[in-house]
Length: 252
Image 1 (cartoon, rainbow, N blue to C red):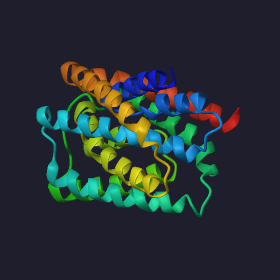
Image 2 (image 1 turned 30 degrees about the horizontal axis):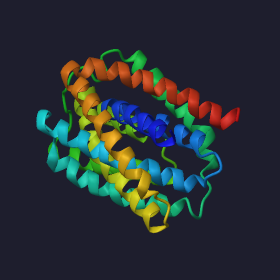
Image 3 (image 1 turned 60 degrees about the vertical axis):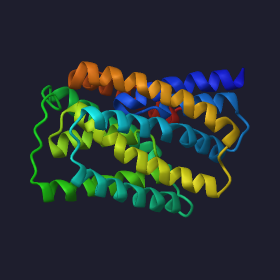
Image 4 (image 1 turned 45 degrees about the vertical axis):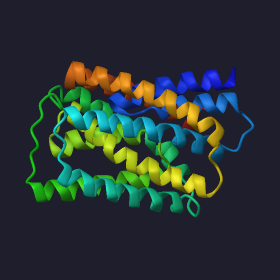
């Protein structure tokens, strides 16, 4: 029964994550509810062991239908990988508690900006020259890679928002780009958890298969319905993240 519940949560997480990020909002609380006495690192490792495969599959599916800017995004993914390792190291020496209280307000700002700017992300119009786009994309990858390794919640949604806001992508192209970079940051975190012995591989395979299945369904919907659909899901996921992170920071 435990494996069935985890697999269903992983399926739904892969579905949401493939569209706009935020899959951890579903799978991580489910794992904590099923294994309430387990060390958090083991549950985070299990989450990464499942989600990295769904994210990678989504990146592959998007790359077949969306014209990704590889010359900017591949270096950015490498920067995300480096940032993820650095963030994972930093959390071993510095407390992340201040981010726990700051995060709901940052997400609220992202949501408010998206709602006010009604045309934001509806049209794909990259605004930077190739060299500048590569530099900014690497900055996004390094910064959010560090954040993902150091703390994590909302990383995929932050990737989407910054690609829309700073690079001029529409929500569909931003989500496609985010999947590539998020795969790199997830790999960094997974490698660290694996080295520390915090991945339950006997569960990770089943959860990975479920996550990939959800990812395929989510990617199909996003590609079929386009940027406007992804924008709506983005708003819904960020709203849920605000409620979840606000509760964790101030009410728990």
